[in-house]
Amino acid sequence: MTPVKYLFAIIILSSIVFLNQCSNADLEETQIKNKQTNQRRIYKNLNIHDALPKTVKAPKDNLPNSKKIALGKLLFYDPILSGDKDVACASCHHPLSGYTEYRDLSIGVNGKGLGSKRVFNQPNEIPIVKRNAQTILNTAFNGINTSNEYAPENAPMFWDVRVKSLEQQALEPILAFEEMRGTHFSKTEILDQVVNRLKDTPEYVALFEDAFGKPASINEKNIAKSIAAFERTLVTSKSRFDLYMQGDGNAMSLSEKDGFTAFNRVGCGNCHNGPMLSDYKSHVIGVPANPKLPAFDTGINETYAFRTASLRNLRFTAPYMHNGNFNTLKEVLEFYEDIGNGKNKHQEVNREQLDPFIDELELTVRDIGPIISFLNTLNDSNFDKEIPESVPSGLPVGGNIN
Image: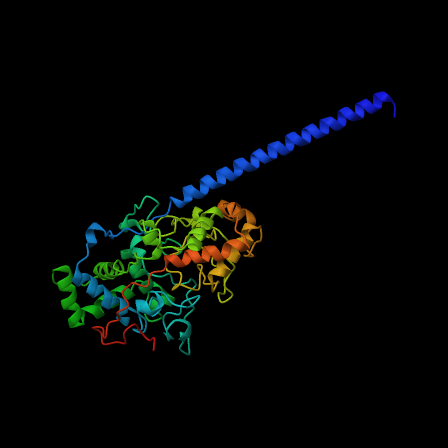
């Protein structure tokens, strides 16, 4: 090699070393900045959670009173509201199961049994309900945001947010063919039929008059108001997480606190925030289809989007997701780990359709245990489990569940 060529080679090699050093320095600086940004995001997210409020709001036209609440509870357990008088609200939202049921998809009209033991009577022409029954616990706070603000008259209900407020929600199952209406009445007939049944029951006539303060007060609006008033009493605001957020540092263990941090670090807090651990927005995440259903559930506006579920009282609310496809929290988190790593789990949902937050998920196997520990701090078993001994119709309490 000539001296000129040798000198040129040295210059080139030095340049490469220099550029490498610069590149490594830039990379290290970028990594530090990303880590700092990530840490800021973690601490910011820790601040977007809070304890449940200690009081419950109600719409101005449905302020609670003890008689209205007691009436609503009786209606909740009375199968007189269903077309065939065989299913009540409590058939699928039972206190023994945290006001939901241990089933992936509900069996309404023409069913018998409770929870996982519930089956259709034969012969049967009623389809299975296509979505998982959500718990009624804490639905009084539906729609609450990270500033603890919510409007009870505009609270989003159901997986597809098809109605707003507990008052509107209360009548929807009665109208639904496979839930409570059945084959004998049309959608336009069923509420009139229920109202007439209640008017023909002397005890209900007296109870409605006591609750609403005037004769002839049995109508569909007051049925809904009574049930909603009762449902707003089903609040669990004394979980260990609530106590921790109220200032009791010992209410959660160190591992649970680590799980809380991990929950936000990996991106769960992007959608599961506020006192109810839900942003109440719609998201496409591509949960696998439930094979029990004859067709794909396309969700909100046929986009495969569903409303973010609350994470409170998960101990009572398995199986999980809108179609009950996952039996354990571990399965849920493994699903999020998979989609966060680019795996598609629903044959009709492309990667491009998934919510942008999916790309921010950084969930790993080692995060799953701590996060589950944290989620268990959101459980609170202190809720009304008292079941009426009888209902005014004289029908079986809770419907055909025995």
